[in-house]
Image 1 (cartoon, rainbow, N blue to C red):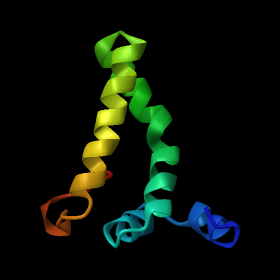
Image 2: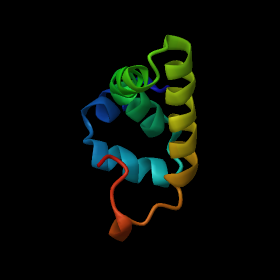
Image 3: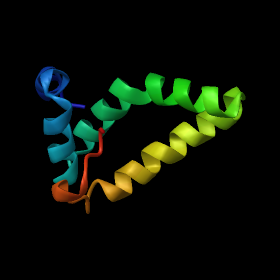
Length: 81
C-alpha cells in the first residue's frame, strides 16, 4: 500500500470505497474488508456457533463480494445494506 494514499483511503466513506473497488482499486477493497471483517466474523460465528466455520463463511463472503462488486448495479440495492 502506498503511504500517501492510505490516509485518504482510511477517511473515505464506505460508498466511496465501493465505487473505487468497482473501478478495480484493490486498496479500497482491502480497506472495506478491514473495516467490516470483525462484524462479519461475529455474525458468522453467531450463526455457525463455530469459530473455524465462521472464519470460512467470512472469507467466502468477502471473496464473493470481490466478484460481485465489479458488476453490481446501484438500482438493484446496496452492497453495504
